[in-house]
Structure formats: C-alpha cells, structure tokens
Image 1: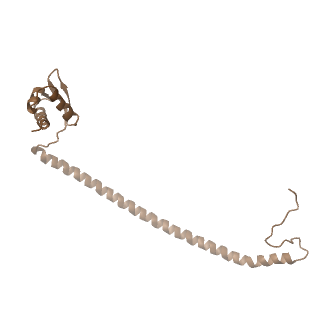
Image 2: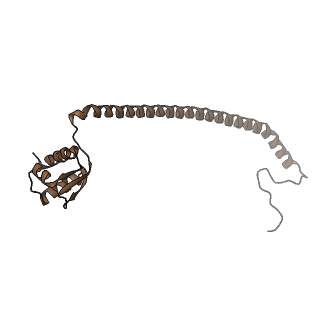
Image 3: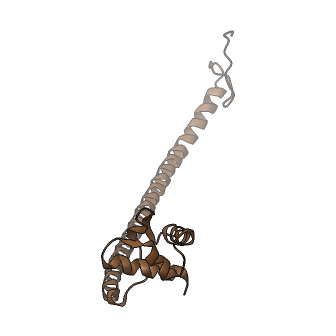
Length: 176
C-alpha cells in the first residue's frame, strides 16, 4: 500500500480516538518508515503542503500535533448525512437558478417593453416631423408666388431705390 494512504489512515484513526496528536513512532510503523527525515518529508511534502492536514512536528515530544484535518474519504456511516447535506445544497442551487431565470425573464420583458415604447415614440416623432414638414411646404408654396411677383414688381419699377435684381447681394457704399 502507498505510504501516504497508510499515513493518512493512521492520522485519521489516531486523531479520532483521543487527542489531537500522533506519536512519530506510531506513524512510522504505519507507513513502514524509520522515524526521522523520511517520515518528516512524507508529513510535510505530502500531507501538510497538499492541504490534507495542518499541524506541526514536535520533535521534543516526538509527535505530530494535528491542528486541522481535511479528510478526503467519507466513512460509510457518514454517507447519509453527506447525502442530506448535498441534497440541501442542491435545493439551494435550484432555488438560486430559478430566481436567476425569473430575473432574466423580467429583464427580457422590461427590455421588450422599453423597445416597444421607444418604437412608438419614434413613430410619433416621425409623424410630427412629417406634419411640420408638410405645414412648412404648404406655407412656402403659399408665399412663393407673391414673393416672386413682389420682387419682379420692385425691379421693374423705374424710379425705385432698389435696382438690384433679386438674388444678388447689395453693396454698401461705406468704406471698410
């Protein structure tokens, strides 16, 4: 069996019994290593750095003091509790998904309503512009013949002061 698995099983079984410390000789016997640098390397490199356990090696007491365990295996007796916790978690996820879907539907409806209102407003603006344009065209059509006749009459009158033909600029006699 791989030494890490043996070490891990020993840590779990010893820490679950009474105290939060495991003697280094007990761990060494479980993994079939001599207590010393190989066991310490196994604990540090494969247990502590991997995040499986938090603790310190107390060389004065010749033990490993466990501060926190993160077991990756679940005992068969813990399966019903784990299944219940997972079901509760799944229910909360389902509720969150449903709330998100409802919010998305409301947002889509609000966007559709906004687009509809903007479209109606744009149609009203176009209609108003057309009616103003039509009114200006009618007014311009009514004013055009009389303006042209008045301009021609002024130009044609021989004694009038305005002898400049229509459409040409008048020059001032003032010097700049």
